[in-house]
Amino acid sequence: MNMLRPPLIFAASLAAAVIFAGCNRPASAPGAGGDAIKIGEFASLTGSEATFGQSSHKGTQLAIDELNARGGLLGKKIQLLTEDNQSQAGQSATVVRKLISSDGVVAILGEVASSRSLEAAPICQENKIPMISPSSTNPKVTATGDYIFRVCFIDPFQGTVMANFARQTLKLQNIAVLTDVKSDYSLGLAKFFKAGFVAGGGRLAVEQNYSGGDKDFNAQLTSIKAANPDGIFVPGYYTEVGLIVLQAKQLGLNVPIFGGDGWESSSLVPIGGAALEGDYFSTHFSPEDASPAVQNFVRQYRQKFNEAPDAMAALGYDSAMMLADAINKTGSTDAAKVRAALAAEKGFPGVTGNITMDADRNASKPAVILTITNGAFKYVETVSP
Ligand code: PHE
Image 1 (cartoon, rainbow, N blue to C red):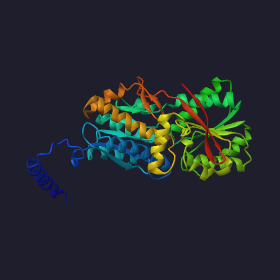
Image 2 (cartoon, rainbow, N blue to C red; image 1 turned 180 degrees about the vertical axis):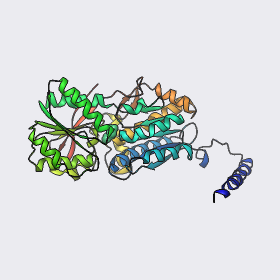
Image 3 (cartoon, helix red, strand yellow; image 1 turned 180 degrees about the horizontal axis):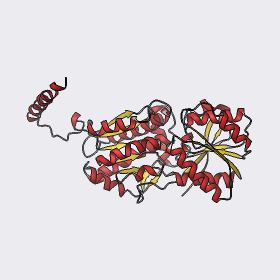
Image 4 (cartoon, rainbow, N blue to C red; image 1 turned 60 degrees about the vertical axis):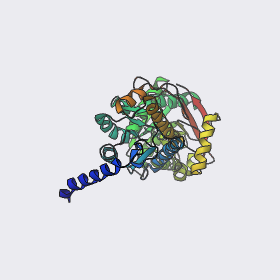
């Protein structure tokens, strides 16, 4: 089979050359099939964090559709090539290599989860393909190299926001922390939260660990109960968080439980149910934000998907729009020039706030705290850096 490939490719390119020779349509005509600007996206469309990837993808798709409706970029249509990593370790590297080597994308958008962004970032850096993570908050992601960007805040900030909220608003003094040791996000956010909580005069009562994919948390929660904390910080993702909160309440642990953006999912309440009532988490965006830019985005998103956008959707939208802005300013898809334009982004008006790239290619933006009331997420407050 392989033996047949070179002659076939040769024949195909010969045929293409003949076709193009007889074609007087400019190569850059908008919508010309093979001539679109290809942007790659990798996301967890299925698997344990499926809602992360689905939301992020919908936001990204909405941005690309809007851009194409306005005429695309540099006179060409944009083609979004989306690959599913199934929420599985190892898959992001595979699909991102494919997007770069076989598909020839000019830039990569993704991922939500920090561990999966960390898998792809070295590949993008090595190939000098700009990558924008919409919502990975672990500091190591952009530290990979100068081609790696993000449009969200990072966990030293998010951890401090929740530490201050726990100390000053909830008045907690003696905290338990339950960390997913398989997740770079969870490990980092736990570390920054603990530092902030202790710096604020609080005490760490007990620390326990789990691994993403676990279903039974009774052993850890029994140890936590024995330490008698007045609150529990769980920097995890919704699939495990829902079960943890449910099992904690079943054990009679009636203290506030709270976490970070990894809680945000339309599947959180279906998993954790009434056990989640009155708990809190920090995130990037609230569709309750009354600003005209946010309300316009919420309207467009609802029209297309028949649901309200969450943080991942809003950040996915912003990542695609900021990339388009950089390509427009550059006037080309040359990777080094696009990279430089991304690094120079200042005050880009995102639906998640204004985005300015700092020297480490991170964005400094406000966090939003939400609570769970009657099974729905409700806005509590905005905390600025
Ligand atoms: N910040 C999380 C991470 O880095 C991912 C996430 C972002 C989850 C936004 C939910 C909402 O892994």
